[in-house]
Length: 299
Image 1: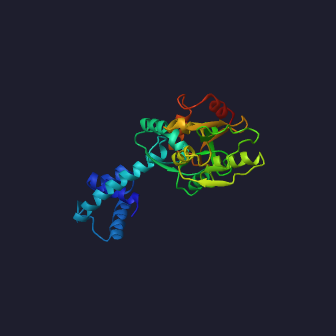
Image 2: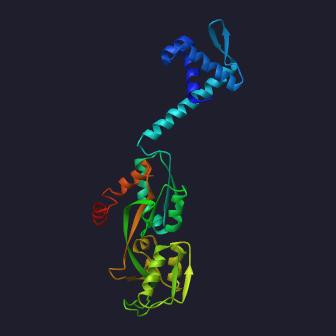
Image 3: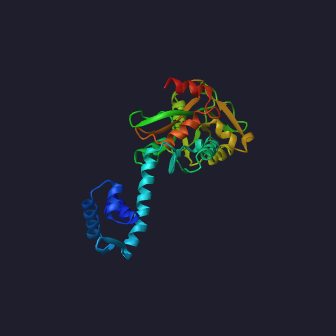
């Protein structure tokens, strides 16, 4: 049983016979008759009660008619969806913890306002985990910190973040040349680009922290920093979500060390209408900073 058989069956029912169905479908009558008999043989039931040249829908045919109409409507809807550039269906988006906490509330709210028919799903993780999920087909796109491999992905700049070291209140100024380097750092798991940036920051000063505390959320990290357990490297924007901001000290990095781009990435050749819709929002004046606009223009 295929869709063309169902279309012929429905046409015979609607037109009241083979002759008019053949005219409507622009087929010869013998072809219509043959296809109906083949469909009946395939299903193992009689779809019509035959009285001479007249056909009456059998009970089994009445059952099939309901399913046939639904299947054909679904097939037409599928074809329209594939040919239509409008966002639709489920959009599976990944993001880093910091991006999800600070950047996504406004971004996803705007997405939902523009495209209410799209179902948004969100997964958080480090860039390596999210990139692997895209390649495995579990995510459609993700917002991750660079660097990102060029070969399997397409990407567009999304946000520029200022990175800072945070410590407990009254912590001595962390010197640019290695003075007052804290011995304990609080980080995410391996694969977090900010962890790598902090480790590199120590390495350029010929130092290494004596202890690393791994945590799974920024608010847990901020709480531990407030308690004096260590320092952390975070996007400065994360502090806007932390009510106890006054209990922290912020230590800026040098200009060559304090900037990081978050990019929207998706599998090469898989830029769907849902992904394009998100790119359009990122390009809008509300979300695009001047530096991002220049970066997009240079890409």
